[in-house]
Image (cartoon, rainbow, N blue to C red; front, side, top):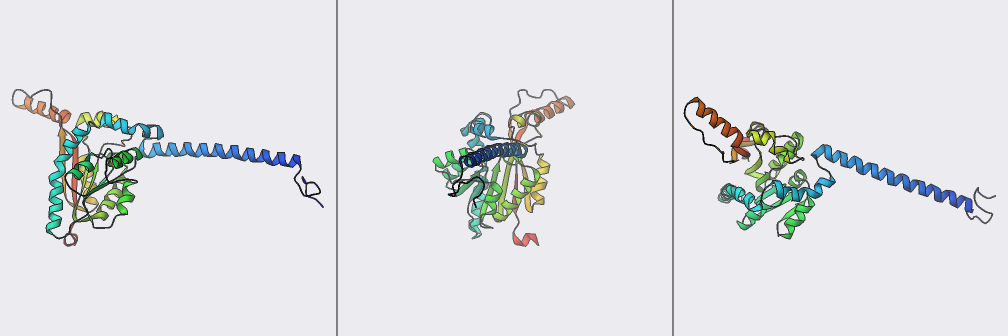
Length: 288
């Protein structure tokens, strides 16, 4: 007795072979169509999560060069933080609790890591953009590709002196920001510091226009909100530091109420474009 589609010698008949080949072609077509749909859904999900997609991701390095500003200019601004770094590392050394230096999340073009390297400060970074990571490694920076929260969570607890994030948190929703703060607190040694710099919506030009130059930004974070979230995440001695004012094109004239109005206009339109929030991981005795 033989099976349908086979000859008496047990071989598949030409008709049966053609039918099987047709089924394979149909399955291959369905698999290709399914893969395309999955890729489309992944792209839509990425857009919903961070406002970007694969096309814009390929432009992001060039976009940063255009809108972030020249590397020399950015480095000069970041140099203002070097006294904070030296203070933190010096305090740790005096207490006999030397940490592992600085961990920068969302390192981008790597200006901060390069500045720290040149200053002799141990520093490493993580970024989700492989183009930035490859370029940073080519310059000898200690930079890895990955997720900021997962990277911090994977570090030894209570070891890092300073966790920095420059112009990163405006890309995150509140849950991701809280997760980032929790992961930073995990990695920091007692007395270590988290430093977040972000655009300042108190500057009306920034809040109404310049912030939206980057389509991956979610929404501006008022200084009071960021200060609260850092404090609520268990950090103490929280400081808000206004940064980078523009020069006003006019000088307030006259006196009295008129001058006060002009000063207010100058402040809201040309005042600090960014701000930083610094918070410190409490010593064990301070948590009691």
